[in-house]
Every structure is written in structure tokens, then in C-alpha cells.
Image 1 (cartoon, rainbow, N blue to C red):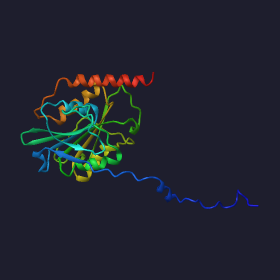
Image 2: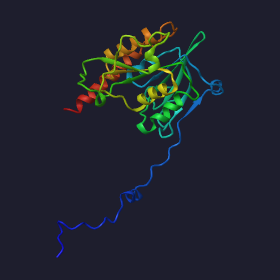
Image 3: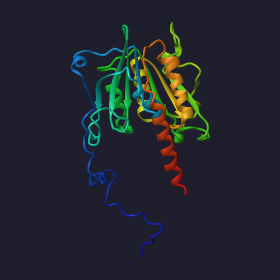
Length: 265
């Protein structure tokens, strides 16, 4: 009689690599691409500064700059246009590109109003930096993700940190773009589109800075981001801001707080 404990078991009928035969391959997604106005589509854009906004306070502040010019959008094919308004709105799932011209210096900013998966982050970063758009300097504005932060984050505490490319950190013959911010703590990480954009700057040898703030909503963090942009980034640039943006942002913050509190009642 066979010993079922000590005998060598029979070989499996399925090899490990054969298991993939039962899983259909993921569908191929078209590459993201830019749609620019006719005046901009025929030339390479070389802004002195490219600002890429993803956090709520930075999106609200830059969306309400009344002196901006819409020049195009980045299309991510898997993001539907259904439900978007004719005029740009913060409720849209869009990635619009704007310029502010000041004498011979052009500043561009991109408002990323949809979520970009990790698998698509590097493809989006390549389109925004180094192909059609070659900036001298890049500023990325994102929020701290609690899952990536080494330490406790209180919703009542407003904090911000920065990460820089080696060229920005060396700061040869130029002043730092963002002053007064501590560097992101060791052991904490940044992922997704923000990390892909900063990596793209490092690869292209472009001066790049990533600023992350916490929390994503609330008057204190809006004041912090507004101060950063007005004091360090847009200094000397002639621009105006719609006065309603702070009220709209506070209404969003209160609505989000109410939704979050309802989850625990």
C-alpha cells in the first residue's frame, strides 16, 4: 500500500506559466496625446516655468486666475469626455493647459483634474515634459498621501514638504524656486503621476521641484499654497485672481468634511 505521507506527489497537471492562458490579456490603450490650439501646435513650447497642479488647493487657485489663456488639453483616451462642461470647470475630468505671458517670459500650467493610474503615469509624464513641451523649470503641486507618509498626520495640522531634482538642489547660479519648505522626510515615499513627473525632470536634466501639502482641503492649506505661488513662484508676474475662489474652495471643504463625518455615524 502506498504511503500518502512520504511518497512524492504526482506532478501537477498545470504548469505555472499555463495559468496565464486562462486570463485574457489586458486591452491595449492608446497613448495619451496633446491637443493644442492652431497657433501653438506647429512649434515646440519652451516655457520658463511649467506648473503641474494636482492638489485641490493648487487646482482652485490656478483655475481662478483670470489672466490665463487656454492653449490646449492632454487627452487620456480612457477618460471619457461625457459630462464635461463647454467652459472649463473644476467639476470636469480634464487636463487643460494654460499660459500666462509676462514680457518675453512664458509660464505654463497644467490642471490635472482626473486620476492617473500608476500604469499610465510615465506615459502622461512623457507627453507633458520633454517632447512638445520643454520647460526650463518644473513645479509639481500634489497632496501628501497618508499611506505613503512615515508618521502620523492630523487633519488639524497643515504641513508641506518638497523634493527636488539634483540639478535644482545644486542650484548653480540661481535661487531656489521654493523657499522655506523642509525636505520630504526620509522613509516617506511619493508615487503615481507626481513621482513620474519628477523622475522625468531628473532624466531630462530639468530643474524640477515637487511640493506636497497636507491636508488636501481646508482654509489653512489653501493659505499655504496661495502664499507659495504668490510669494515664490509668480512673483513679478502680472496676474489677477477671481475673488470667489476662496468661498468656492471653503464650500467644497465643508461638503467633504460632512461626507467624511457621515461615514462614521
